[in-house]
Picture 1 (cartoon, rainbow, N blue to C red):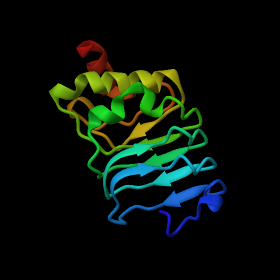
Picture 2 (picture 1 turned 30 degrees about the vertical axis):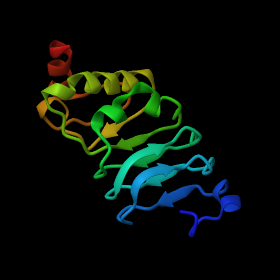
Picture 3 (picture 1 turned 120 degrees about the vertical axis):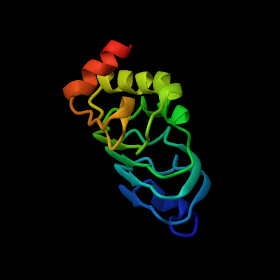
Picture 4 (picture 1 turned 180 degrees about the vertical axis):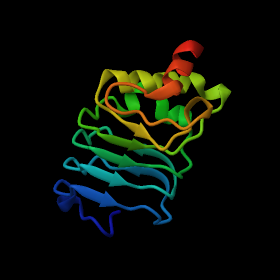
Length: 143
């Protein structure tokens, strides 16, 4: 990142498309305070810091090495009040249902949309303030 984005320029960057760049380890984006779109998908990232990126509207972070449990912590995305699209690209099994419920709670608290996931054993698209179709009923009944 240091090679492509000098520290003084980072505060003005609105789009960061760094998918498929063989990035590894922790990605710290705190200096990118104007960031609205982040695509860091298909890398080998193990963690990322979005704590200063409150302007983010679109986040694509699928196909990395970050666990779903880390994503589902409420504080991971809670400061992203402008978030419109969040693509984690995760399948969730029975052990991860608690993390799923936390992510759905985040969805209900704001205008977030989580897509391209396989929640509770079936494909789901979360739009607006809730789930659609039979998946919503199944998740409600399982809760």
